[in-house]
Length: 169
Image (cartoon, rainbow, N blue to C red):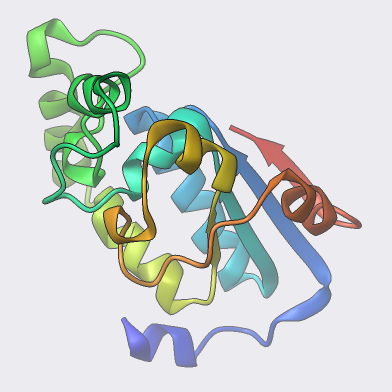
């Protein structure tokens, strides 16, 4: 993947894309990462600010339970984090829905969310977790994937949107 990043157009400071990612479901994660990597490939400075349910896909796949109290721990159990555990927003079919989508994606050579996440990082996409959400849910930086930026607040996210194309997913 590092070779692909070397052939990308030069980043244009005037072209910025900011994605405020709050949903965390599989199809929204795919859309976010595809748009982020496409924007980076087109030379845009891309930032993804992950907040609320959108933060869960950025949790390490091997992290099962986190939080300091029973409510935080319960939320982490019922909303398992990581790219391998993301659910669809619709049509779960008792767990078969996400498997069907992943199978269709594989058949049509669509990169997995984990591959897209790695590609985004290789391309310089800034992945910023929301500090307030982390505090509320009892997450620490150790719960999150490697390479993610330092947690930040809403002010940072809004400052990033100045002059940027902004998407709310």
